[in-house]
Image (cartoon, rainbow, N blue to C red; front, side):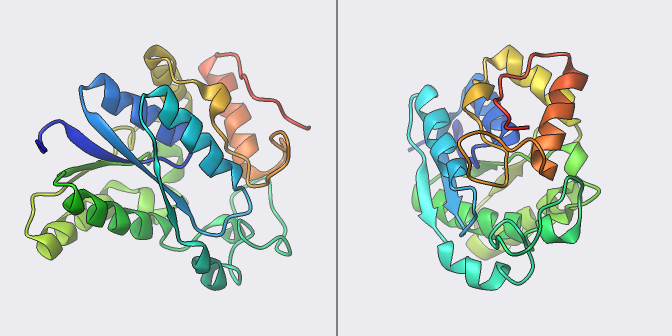
Length: 218
């Protein structure tokens, strides 16, 4: 398998990762999506990732890391319903070192199928609150991946300097099916409309001046 035009895409099922997947496709990559079950309440994320992968003519490899819930349940409301959700960023919605865990697995997957490129959906709005979305993090992680594999692993986050509203505008030009994506931290029939992820989703579509296809409960 040629390493030049193949890439692993960390596909969560949300707006950012879906746009990155379509970016990779638009740039001529043959994409190999990977999705994670880390014990999150919002299992609809993985369902969304499967649907998005299908629109790209592929399937996503779902990795069962659900036992991580035993670690995360003391710190984050994303896996523990007893920790209240908030409409703004606060520590209970931060999953510690999550992207590092995902990227480590993505590197192992990449090596196993002789692929050197990995892309994930870090974007600028998250940098302030999520250290593992910052360029200095993933560039340092890239160095560690190369040291740990003796391969020229490249980790890309093409929208790490792009605000979420601009990312949505980019995704629209690629034809991203945003109606299939899932952002909500809960697992109701529709997005709750009140959690931090839903609030940010609403705001981003408004600022992008693009019709939000999402159905919200509130």
